[in-house]
Length: 149
Image (cartoon, rainbow, N blue to C red; front, side, top):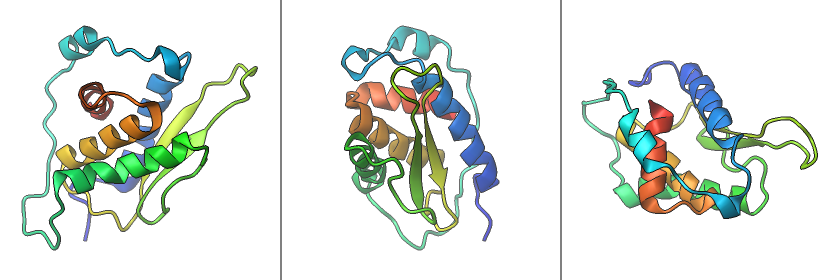
């Protein structure tokens, strides 16, 4: 069964570049502050094609968000590759503190993922941002929308 969101390789690469671009410029966890006005004004409307058929499994929004949150808490705890390759996973590409390379959190969707709607993907990313970087739910939700656009 093909993914209703398109090629999984496309999503993996897309999310890689977005995470790399956004999080590589964060100076420290202590100074995180989201410029909500700028992000809200620059979001162009994008229409995603979501799966609308019958579902084999229905999870609550909290269960979906927790997928990302648990990946995030593992990442915050120092795990460089939390998750399972066949499901949801993150590759943390971190340079040495004195290095001049950019850091990136690469969010991957494996072949056995159940995400079928952009809302669910955003919830997972929101949970990851909350778990890893201690963003507030509101800021993490705003950033997850920006990341997927």
